Image 1: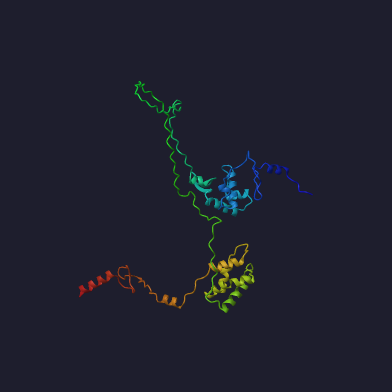
Image 2 (image 1 turned 135 degrees about the horizontal axis):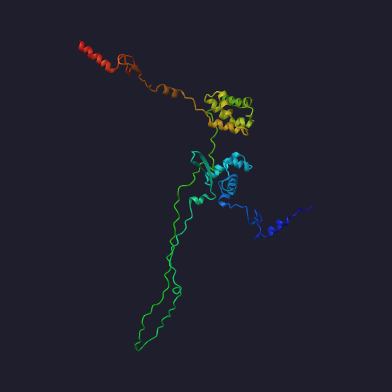
Length: 349
């Protein structure tokens, strides 16, 4: 049985102007008469916005004034979850389409107003209207050109006096309008919205390589292999394959070489994993790289630490005569009391 053809679609395709492309999309454009929203290509084809952000922007732009567009309100209207909607709103805020403003009401209550701009580039670079100078319009008679006959060269052998008529006013055409002065484009100003969240398509920094031990001895290799193979007994979600174990052995060996205890390594690698854990080997490689402990100090480092001069702080003492506080390694009298006692001793002598 043949496939049923849609006659309406066939008729619409026949009305498409020009030859139909052999590949790609074919647009059937039917003008809207009601319930439509105008969306610019700068938003629909934005190279740095995700499709979720573009869809959320179109949904917000189609809503009437005063509609709630918070995360929970949009989650109730859309099929996306709150996390995806929050990420899309952050993208729109980073590219200037959305802005959240805090406003204080007269009753000292602070509210947050959400402002959506359908074309943020127009706020940064507004279109300048050229100034039109009001010029006086010439009269109708002045606009009529005056034909002046060309002078013909006629040889005159005998001079003849010809009465010269009185000069008459000859109407002249109005002067041409002054040329339009090109208006310089406005100087680029500071961006209205500051990007705080990098776009999803931004290049990511290369990953740091897995730490390597100074010398992968057979003892370190056996200890690291046994540690990784036994890891699932303490954390069942960290069940590793043989290839994962061989790939992660140098990182564990680097930790063991730095005098890290196996129980401390196990806690650092398996504590508080994400749920659900889809790639345990990638998580272990990340934590082995980012949480690598420092190397223990060597003999030279400890000797330099011991040879560092010690700072001796003289303690406070209380004077036995005047109860004044003074610094001295041993208790006794302050300087003034010592001088007074010496003066009395000299007077008595």
